[in-house]
Length: 323
Image 1: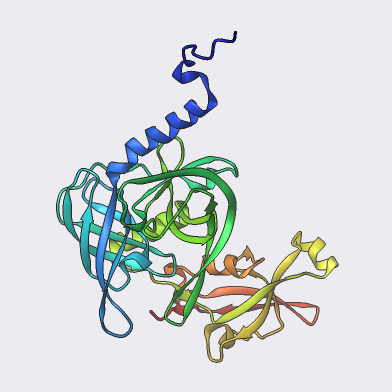
Image 2 (image 1 turned 90 degrees about the vertical axis):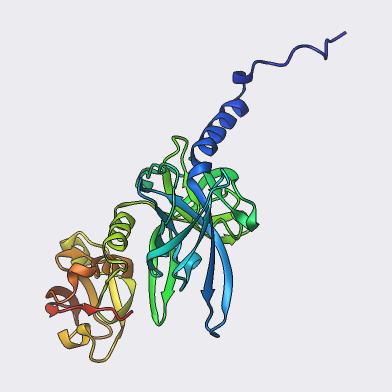
């Protein structure tokens, strides 16, 4: 007779146990460092509404990183930690066009989480989400990076910006996870959870060079200034001879030029095929968008475009994007 009552295998002998060890170690490191946020924000009708989300401690002196849509127009709120500690916080700065915000606790906070680098992620890599969905504090879910390089539109008033390099994961995310941590096996935070895109699909803002610059600007200035050209376009192929000559297959077909905007004053027209800006190859609106940071405001920017089979050089001077 087969012995069905034999001793179980040792804890470290299965792949599941190895997986569990990673998830539990990440949870142990990050749970104390991810706060539940409660805010009272004014709605468009003027009435105050209660809001909730998550935030990640990322400095030794009480600064936390979260989503701009979590804090909304609020100036302050309350942060609660896994050990039962509660402290008021105030909003240092928010940037709706990247969906990032920095708040500062007015009381004691745990040691900071370690920020990693999302550009090193691979599809299929294990990730762990830590947050406070549906008011359930200290919730941990795990999954994999299911896709990279996603785009997520963000809006602030009449301004629209596309957030690049968004991380897609199948780790379960629910309302309240926003602002929480997406971490890799080492415990480093590589993303800030931001949205549920559908059944089994969650999105996170990546921690990379661009977002680090945004975070530093929010810490220093409380807001992010951006440059504005006043154009809209869509990727379009270059003529074969020009593509070979420039070693560039795609440019940005200009479909709209805002009247009296910087691009219009430079002479750029709808129908032009923009191939470079400031010496950088332009293949999409996102490439152009990445050039529109604060240091571009008021600085002449050389644009090279194809018009009627002729390359022309124009000079535009971006202005500050209205808040």
